[in-house]
Image (cartoon, rainbow, N blue to C red; front, side, top):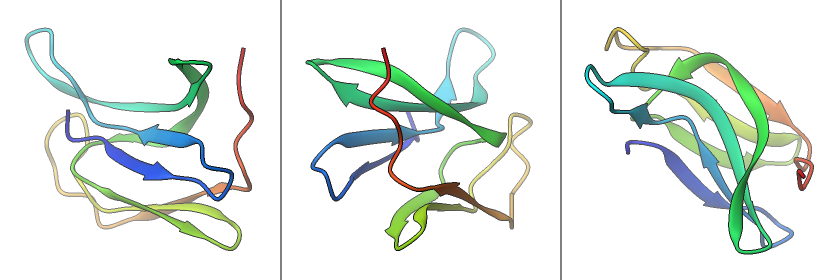
Length: 88
């Protein structure tokens, strides 16, 4: 939950970050791409985040704001460069 979902120019669906909730909940640094009817790993963020934005820009996916794994507000952005690999 609280992940950012977006459609890439190729039409692929991307899930970035979010919370993983076995107790206690924690923000995660995962990036997954929906390929062949299932989610596959496609990379990692530099830091865990949830409740953030993810926007396609010319150079890749810009991920900004949100909360870290200790629920502290993040004021940073990071760029996931280029079109991500399809995985597996």
